[in-house]
Length: 370
Image (cartoon, rainbow, N blue to C red; front, side):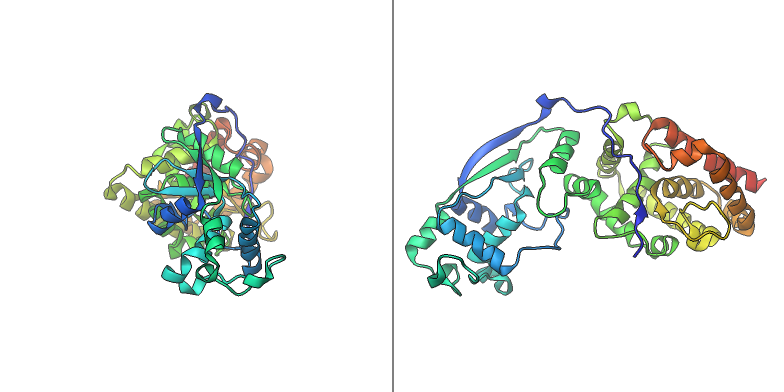
C-alpha cells in the first residue's frame, strides 16, 4: 500500500502555558489497579493504542518475575479526566500483562498467561496466578505502583501535548491517534464511518493507510475546512494546525445528526467527483502529463475535496467533461506557481499558505467552468 505524502504542518508556533499542566501523583497497589480493571474502570482497549507489537508470553512472564523479585515497575500515566473510567496513556503493555495473569482466566481464558521463559524462578514455570503459593500472590497484589494522572480541567491542547510526549509504548502516537483518544463520541464515530466509505477508498485508490488513523485524519481535514472555511482560517486562533483539527473534533461532538449527515453527503459527492475527474491521479502532484504517479498529498486532498464539494452537480458534470483541460491547467499551476507549490509542500498549516492553495484551486475550477 502506498503512503500519503507527508507535510510539515506539525510545528508548534505558540506553546501552551506550563501552569496549565495538571498532573497529579497517586501511589497505588497492584491490587487496586486490578480492582479498577475488574470493574471496567480502566479503558484496556483505548482506541488510539495500536495492537501491533504486543509483548510475547515470555516478555509478559518476565514482568511478573520482576515483580516477584521486587524490581519496581515504571510509572503509569492515566488520563483521569473521567474519574469513573481512566484512559491509559503509557503502560498498556504492563497493565495488559497484569490483566492476563490475574484476571483473564475468568473473563478471557484464551489470553490467560502461564509463566514461561523465566530467568530465576523456574519452579513456577507453567503456573498461572491461581497456581502460585499464597505468599507470591500477596507479593504481587501488594506491589506499589506509581500513577501519574492527567487531572480534570487540563485544557485539550495541553492534554494533546502530554499524550504526544509521554506515550512510549512502541511507536509514538500519531497526532490523529491522540485526537481520537481525547475526543471520543460523535466525532470518532463519524470519522471511522466516513473513512470506510467506498467512494473515499476508490478516489484514493486505497492508498491512505488505516493503521495510524491517517485515513481518519484525511476525513477530519475535509470536515474542519467546512466548519471553518479556508478564507476564515487564522493560525493565530490556534496553537498549531493540530489544535485546529482538535477543535474541529470537539465541535463535531456538539453537532446534531442532521449536520453529520450533511458532511457525509458532501464527502461522498466530492470523492465521486475526484474519481471521475482525476481517476488514479486524484489528490497527487503532477508536474508532467506522462510522469509516474506520486503519493497522496494531504494539502491537495483538502483543497480539491472541499472545493469540489462546493460545486453544484451541473458544475461537476462540466468538470468531468473538461477533465483533460483541468489536468493541463493543474500541471501548469504546479510548474509555474512557486507559491502554490510551497503551499502544498512546506509549512502547510500557515494561514497564508492555506489561503493560497484553496484560492488557487477555486480559481482553476472557475477557469475550466467558463
